[in-house]
Image (cartoon, rainbow, N blue to C red; front, side, top):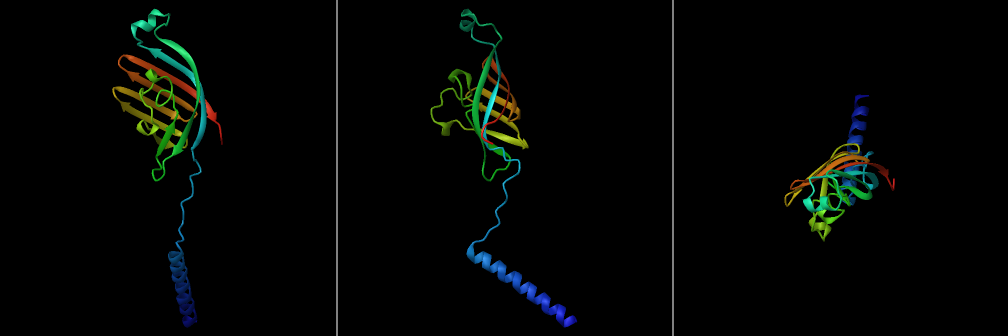
Length: 168
């Protein structure tokens, strides 16, 4: 019986080595599965922008300081390959989209020059902190429920946004 179990042990080891060599030669690899909480996709947000500290000439044309606007927009979120805790964001109002004077990259004409990255905290939760040419954009919360602030000089624009995924 002892010879028999030793025979099967050698056979199992030889089979394991053969399969490993076969996979190595053919380039077999075990790809990591995509996380269940993949947050990549298009999102629609709506909510308020509260502006304060506006230049004096804006107050002359009947703007109150602070004043609140309604806003709505769609933006795209993509997981960064090889960095599981980082997302690339395209079209986030106040960061890389919107009226030029009211975004952290006011003179951006090429999206490669004004990239917006966020830190992925948990399933759907992100944090963004960008500083560029004296302007700062900070956001936190879930992708479908964000609180953000753009500040430059004595001007600040606060965002309170909520929404839903578009293409999921």
